[in-house]
Length: 288
Image (tube, rainbow, N blue to C red; front, side, top):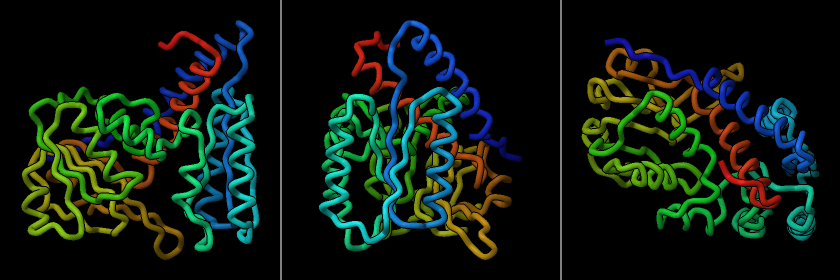
């Protein structure tokens, strides 16, 4: 068996085209364009690349976007003030703060300050909580992007076993909630899990979100499983590595995502969809 490649770049391109068409249509009816504000603190090269990508996506689909690039020495108080200003800005539908943040900044406090109705990254406890009780609004962007990938191949979730490797607040935990909501039986594998490979090997869907290059080998994977690699690490010469041993696992899985070009583009398009939803709610546009 040789796995088929789940090409996130191609799928995201199709979805961006759909968003652009919808935005152009409502723009012609006199509605305000969706607005996204990104706050970038410091000069982390990877973060700068991500923010440029987000701004490019906004330009492509016709969103209004702004980037506030702040010094790495910005104070907690100044950063909080920026967020409160954006919360009050009627031209902005979505607010996100690019992570990681400098050590002197309380990241939890920053996330909590973003208005839940503008939390298009889906990190706020309110939005995670709504997902947990099966009433989702703004869904965490990376897990939502993964679900869009799985939907693309027509996966029937009900009755399937899923394993999520990693239990972070931004990916692993909401990923498990998304799969549970879809009808799969979910096992979360984390650093305290005993016999992790044995548990993962039972899964029809494997999502790895650890950030440890080469963690998942072929003997972790059930033949025919769908494997989604969220983990991404920069190595020598700025080369990107995923959690999954791609070549070996490709000989066992039915579908697999590459790194790069798999989940990353889908995270960005999920962010656009959340911003579009926020703009619709704010302007009273009928949800579609």
